[in-house]
Amino acid sequence: MNRLNVGLICLLILLCGDAQAQFAIYTIDNQYKAVFPGRPQFGGETGTGDQKYRSYNYTDQGNGIVFTATYQVGKTRFSRKDVPAAIHYYVSAYAKVGNGIVTSYRNQLVDGNDSAVFSVKYELNGTPIRKYSVVAYKNGQFFQWAVADFETRSSMSAEQIFNHYLANFSVN
Image 1 (cartoon, rainbow, N blue to C red):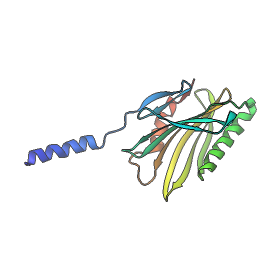
Image 2: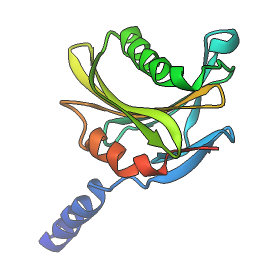
Image 3: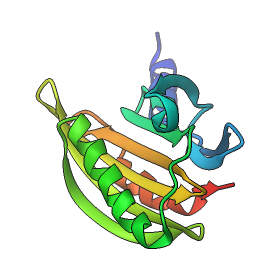
Image 4: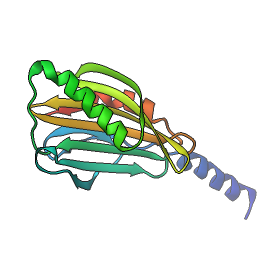
């Protein structure tokens, strides 16, 4: 193989090997919208009755980033004044289930809905996982979108992706 061919192959690897994910807004079961780098796949349901949740996810294998969208299928009504406490409880329970620690938390309106933007740190087989999430409450349901990375393995920052695309999260 001559030097020109080797040079062209190296150039192609440099140009294509570090390709950025192509992000788009996807509608989840006609309930809400969130950004993913590809069509999210149904991940299943958990819970029963009013506490049943449906999940969708997409794993960007090339960059080591995991995107999830989870929403409550049933409805749990809270008075307006109890919604912030209910959201806080949701976040605490969410972290506890995965033996995680909430590393940041702030209440805010997202798309006009009471919400919390938060991050959780987990560990999986000794590898730290950082998950950046938003959870919104509307009409008796919780809607969550999250972006996670593996601290030592991901080539992109879940935090930067999450912060960049948070404005595209909306509940119908």
